Amino acid sequence: MPSQEFENAVAQSKNIPTKPSNEDLLSLYSLYKQATEGDVSGEKPGGFDFKGVAKYNAWEAQKGKDKGVAEKEYIAVVRRLSQG
View 1 (spheres, rainbow, N blue to C red):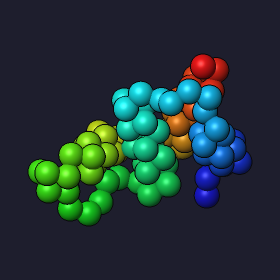
View 2: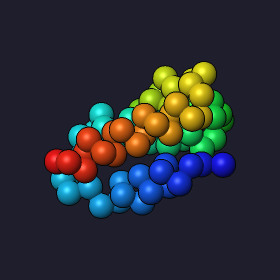
View 3: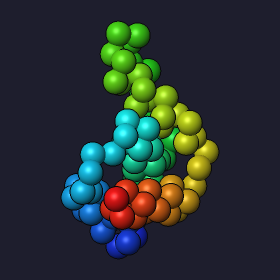
């Protein structure tokens, strides 16, 4: 079950003052998926689905990371982005 601090960070991520870079967005996505679902699952999207492939690859890079560690890293990214 996700921690309250993680759930607060998820809510806060929707109110980040400036638009995060694509790298930060992929980091948030992959850490969120790892924290909530664990290792990547499903088939990798086709080659012309560039966004889908990038998201899949980012999540795959988190493979093996403990859910609690992924939560803490997600919280740290949200904090950094929220500070502007």
